[in-house]
Each structure stands twice: as structure tokens, then as C-alpha cells.
Length: 198
Image 1: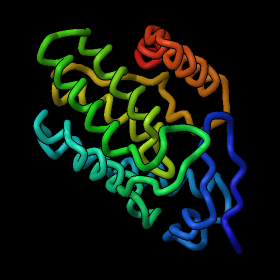
Image 2 (image 1 turned 90 degrees about the horizontal axis):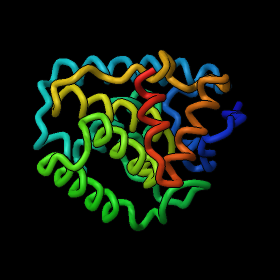
Image 3 (image 1 turned 45 degrees about the horizontal axis):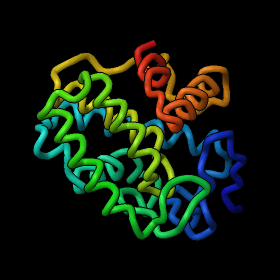
Image 4 (image 1 turned 180 degrees about the horizontal axis):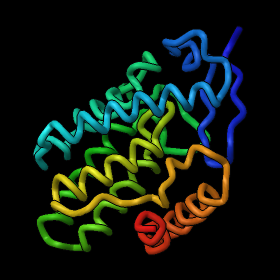
């Protein structure tokens, strides 16, 4: 029995090779997959809380990969590894490391020069890393946790509420999130900041 997935708007389909990376072979539906991934993500959040993370560690390619592995490593063999194919979203897969380094350098500059508010820096980081789309799957959830880590561990501020949703369900909250992301794609980050704070 293979993994049969029906994707919601804004989700990135996995190719057959990526589906082969599923560690828990009894999973056959998207609902079951979401459940196992959520349990794994909760463990990752616990890890971030107890890790006393510093800016020097957070703003690195290694940390971006480590966080993804902590979030999805119980479920996917490829967790924490950059994708090796192009998707319906994101940059060319061969450019991921280069674009991520540029983004991290930009974030360091924004922090050092107080270019934007802490909220806006965190959300700009979240938005740009999703646009790069480093991993085969889980990029949205990964980017939201990264934004929270930047808020809490770098700025010492409260994390975002994200409308009290993990945005896995195809509901009105997810639709609002997709609309806010599309506005950010057009250069208007305010809707995404507002969404993150509701």
C-alpha cells in the first residue's frame, strides 16, 4: 500500500522518490501523515525551548537543516537535507545554499542595523526562506518555527500566535495565510505580520 496524498492549495507535492523516504510504512493517508509529523514537530519545539539558542547558531545553514531534521526526522529519511529536484514553488534546487547564505547575511544586516522592527525581520526571514523552499516538504511549518525562534531567542520577545493554527487544515485560516503570503510575494509584508500576530 503506497502513500496516497491529496494536496491542498499552497502545498508542495512530493515526487515518488521523496515518498519512498517515509519511515513509517503504515501511514497511508494525509491525515495520518499530518498526525505523525505534528508529534515530531512538538518534540522539535521542546528541543528549541531547552537548547538555549544563540544568534550565532541560529543564523547558519547548519541550524536551518538541523531544525528541519528535528521537526521531521522521525517521519522522513530526507529530513534536514535540501531538496534535489525543482518543485511547483521555490528557486532552482541547485541555488538553495547560495540563496540561503544571501538571506542569512541579509537577516544579520537587518538585525545589526535595526533596518526593520524585530517582528518584520522575523517575518521577512520566514517569507524569504519559504520562497527559497529548501526542503522537499514541511517548508511552511519550518519557516514559522524559525520566525518564532528569531523572535524569542534573538530578540527576547513573545513568539507569534499564527492564528492559533498549524495551517495544516484546508480551512479559512489557511486561506487567509495563503492570501497574506501572496501579498508578501508582491512586496507587501504587512498582511503576513498581521496574520502572524492574530
